[in-house]
Image 1 (spheres, helix red, strand yellow):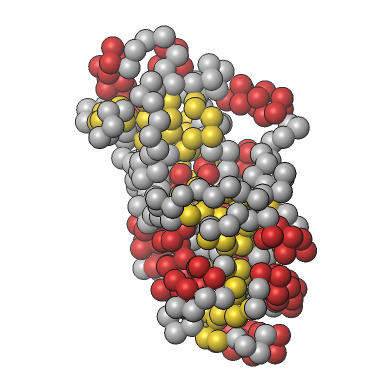
Image 2 (tube, helix red, strand yellow):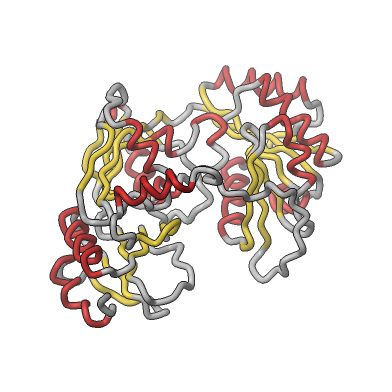
Length: 380
């Protein structure tokens, strides 16, 4: 295997002038500006046995060793297609979430994705990680929104999955395999996504609850009776940040036309009489995102929504706790610098979803990355 220093000239020849840089920690970042250049880099690294960590804008780079390169899509940042009437947009993977939403707003549209990530995070990284925030309650995850993908495999092959239109389902399994795979099938270089029209009305409400069990029970009642755009169950520490009051509670969002939102709000009050409107809903959701993005010691567990109260009971002390109450996903984290308390998680907390299927996963990965140069589970 060649050393990183000895192949810099070879990498630049394949990635193009100006594609190489060093992060403050010293790792080499390679940023090709085309899918052909990305293909050439990965083909070369596969042949040389150079390990590769995949990245978008490099906003999530952790402190790993320097015995690999970082392959970034940040210079592949063009919007390639936008058909407003078809509710579809095609983008290179390096387009940031902020730039994508700004472009769509000019036509009264948006991507219903609000992952706990910086606005500078790229759509490619969000799709690769399968990240989704509170809006998943109504709109699902990147796996539900991605229509087609272009990827470069570990050995440099350019592969296309899916299509450019909503009704085209060719290669659908390839899309579902790649979204959320954290780069194990290759570098995502382009994405085609469904878009939505910006809702005419958008309101947020808070429901105070006496304890976590009551909050879970209320969340399930709301989930079963109302169509929420977002339904989050939050611990007192998070409610303190958002409402300046400490209690277990629900943060609920309705969006759509004016009549539909008004009806949902009235029905919510019937279910939970203590419901209060949030004056600045956008600020509340932004605050939640910022707290989660800036936290540390993140963990999560997934269980059936009916078991939400039991799952919450296993959360560690001294942590922020939030749950996507519509689908039973509980997240915990601390603020930066907060000491890690001894967890009281049940045995199934944070268990890998691939337990029992590792042999299958290994075979799939080997077909996309024969030399195993892609660092598993890292999309930085």
